[in-house]
Image 1 (cartoon, rainbow, N blue to C red):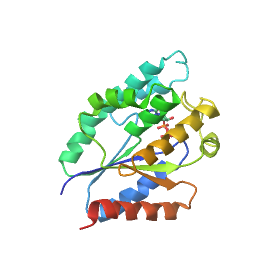
Image 2: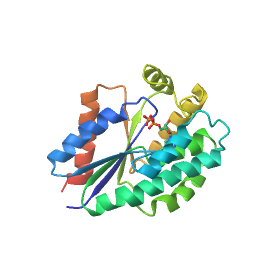
Image 3: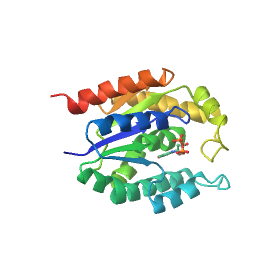
Image 4: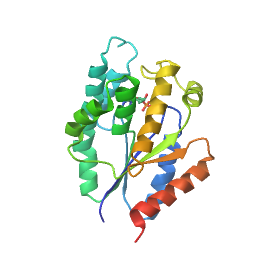
Length: 208
Ligand code: TYD
């Protein structure tokens, strides 16, 4: 069995974790061993980088440093975890991946999407997701859902206009690359979203 690589994207609070759990169960029923990873993180080194990136004491961090740190965490995760799992025939679901950098650093921070893809080209070394799922949610909505939860980290502390740029960025990319990025309305009921996603995965991966 060949490996499958799916990434889940969306603004803070869009419900990625819940959908990943459901998708995992579905792919298990298909006979896959599943590996779930989250970004930034998923290895000891990547988690250490995550601590640096999200630490709200580090307000002086330059946008380029931020981009490179996300890419460094990703490079380690890909080489240590994702690539071996795919070679093993596993289904890998990653909570955020390159498109997060494209929208948060490329568009939100204004570094440019091309710059982000260039840098990340080296970070992932050809290990591209076959499908990226985007859970679409207005920024206001996402922040509200998040604020009910834990203390905010350095990225979440950004103002609403930053998060609106992020959402606009996701929408633009989803429109530009519909074959790569599949967009779903995150305000739909959990079960409905899951059903839409499984139909899409079925069509892309399991259709004769
Ligand atoms: P996390 O707590 O994992 O957020 P969420 O639960 O919303 O996924 O924190 C990750 C934060 O880092 C999130 O605000 C998005 C941001 N991020 C980037 O800016 N660039 C990236 O490449 C990645 C992977 C995440």
